[in-house]
Length: 99
Image (cartoon, rainbow, N blue to C red; front, side, top):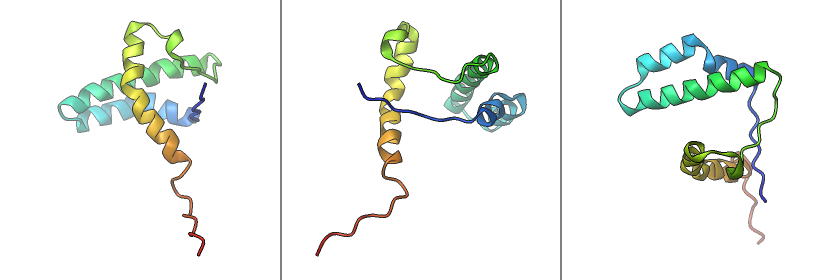
C-alpha cells in the first residue's frame, strides 16, 4: 500500500465553500469550466460540513467508495499521483553530477 497525504487548511476549505468564492468562480467560468465549479462547490461544501462536525482526517480508498464515487476516483487518481511525485522533486535544487 502506498499512502499519498494531502494537507488542506480549514481556512482554504471555508474560503472555497463560501458563497462569494463560488459566485465569483461561476461568473468567470465558461462552458465546461462551470461544471467543474459546481463539482468543486459540492465537494467543498460537503467537506466543510464534515470538518465543522470535527472530522479532521479523511481516508480515501477504492474499497470505501460506491460506483459513482469510484468513477471520480479513477478519473482523478492519475493527476493526484503526478502531484505526489512532483511534490517530492519540485523546488529542490538539482544535485550536481559528480565529475
